[in-house]
Length: 453
Image (cartoon, rainbow, N blue to C red; front, side, top):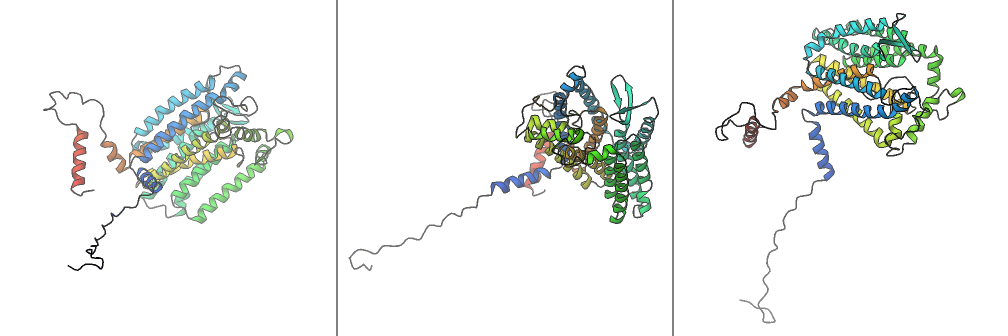
């Protein structure tokens, strides 16, 4: 063996050990995004969003109605919880309507379309009968039911237009008649204009705007061409402009956009004090029940401007939470309308989503000073049983449609009671029949091991 010049044996170089390949760490933001995306794509996502979002909005609305209405009730020599108790009763009745609507088959919903429309038209015409109709804040849109309870039929006109319009368009689509513009407009637009006329006889332009938004939503979903859509929008805009120009009250509301001072005669008092309430709330608010503006400075604190009191007491965090709940509700409604193959479900879900989101945008926009004060309540949130009952029935419609999706039906059918065992399941543990959920779990794991997806 050869040696080096120093007489020492040469060093033998050993090969480098192969370095272990490190797998790049997954970005936590991307991992969170993928997890959220998988959660959004689950079959029951829309069902949970509609049910949970609507219940959270209703419960938070009850809390804010109680907080915002105490001073008003005491000023009227009424108990402090007077308006809250009435709203709680309406919410309990509305919960029954929601449950009934969510369990009804779609055929029954379609069968109820014409009776609900006929009943709404009859009640809206009854409002104009002297001695029966009641005027509130200059608008004669109410019927006295008895005692302190009053009914506003125009709120049920929204539900009637959604159900009847969806059934009408679905039947015409089945017969392939919607390719002709006359079948798309008649009789949908004339009936909608009839409802609008009955509403405007009482002077309630806010509800008329919501009804017009529902009509446009149905026309959009039915595939109305752009020129036809623009024509109907132009006619409605011209009529609205005439109605605004001929009413000093509506012109005054239009002039209060982005106002920061009440102006001469305190014409913009309500709009300005709504901004004051939001501005004084800060990030987390002054605390529940600690609003200052509800002590007589802010009119309609528990109805149309309850969002301003929410911003003052719960701050930016509270108002953003309310906005997030409405956004989730709107997303779920659009998802239900976009994933169904039933034309009635698509039109009805789209109509209900347009109704709730348009009304929420108009109410919140008026409180923020971005839109004129239209006098519409915040859905599921403001005080008012006449608005709460049909809205909760409409939420029940969305829940029924979300449950009716094929993937959602399959997911719901796999559910079994988690606690206890079935009745009548006697015998020992060895002879007892295995639980169904456990059996289905073994089937699912066997399917995964075999490569089946």
